[in-house]
Image (tube, rainbow, N blue to C red; front, side, top):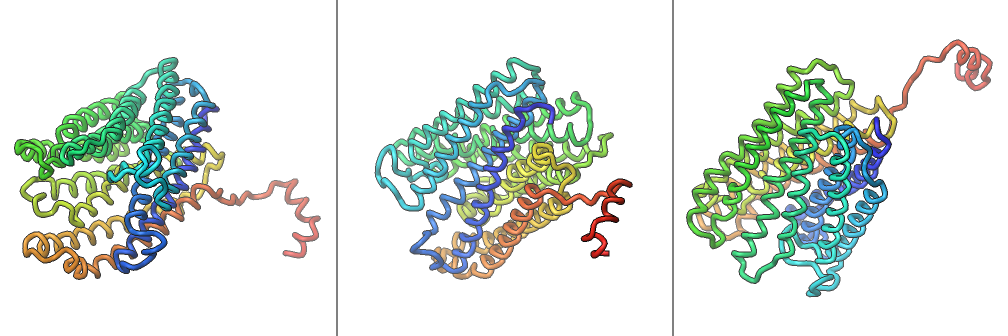
Length: 465
């Protein structure tokens, strides 16, 4: 660790990992509710569990992005973070807002209240006071990071990272606009949801992945930056008008059927570019970096993102196909693998790279960390395949044969049981990751001559022998 203020990232990463544990645990609870519909009905209804699951996912990923920025910006700009106090104030605001959201959702507090009660918009259910807090925290963060970069060295990685983070903050302002017209509501709702995960988050992903590849492989900065600009250009080109694949059947003009289909088809390109970039960098690399686990997570991130966001996204993005598959378990299959591959794996990669240095525990439990990668990734891939099969059956029975929704759900029971099994693997992998990262490996060091003489005279050591 070269700069003292990189230590700020530690608080963000620890908070993110705590929410990560909450998120996957709630996912497992929801998986069992699909099997036994009456499970925890009175204590934790499914809609509340789902809100907590999805919101904790979004918050911990954003905390990971913030932590990554506080870690890599000092190295890239060769400058300490502008204000440590502001960074911790930002984290405190986000923690208070998260606690407020959890209490509001769980106990349904202040229902119907304009400022204090939750909203009814998926993923944007946060009470308005929490949304205001998020904006304040985002402004503090952007000021802090921007001032740091302006005072220091400018690189392609920091430029793209800041562009992505500024756009995340600006697009979130559409969360405050909630028109009465449902079609208009959904039009602007996707400005946040789609243009985050299939637009600006991709910029953040590309910049962090570029930083990791440069550090882990030793490839020249010029080569990394060329790839980075190409990936970012394709992400923006495809992602902005690719929003149209959410406008197919919500009351928008018919031309969105073709705009959405064509441009969302191109959304595969940046994810393929990131996968190719990662493997080419490793192939060209000259450095045998000791942190193999971080390299594994980086390659896994690029690969699973391509299949989850790219291939599985393309499977149901054309309007002729989406007409039948929209809202089925195929959507859930795509969403799970896409988020895990693109953003969960990315955050776990930068945490794996940075935490040993932040904690002064290098080397650390790399074998356990890599085992957690294979356990989580295998579980998520199996879950994706299971949900895809469930969605295929659901599409045929419900959308083609016209059977009732609940009758079809009963026939998908076996798929939900398998999905729950894969969820158990993911949770175990997540717990193993947390253990590997946070607990230091007990080093075995051969004693020197002085130490050997001391041990020979130690009664406990003599008795042990």
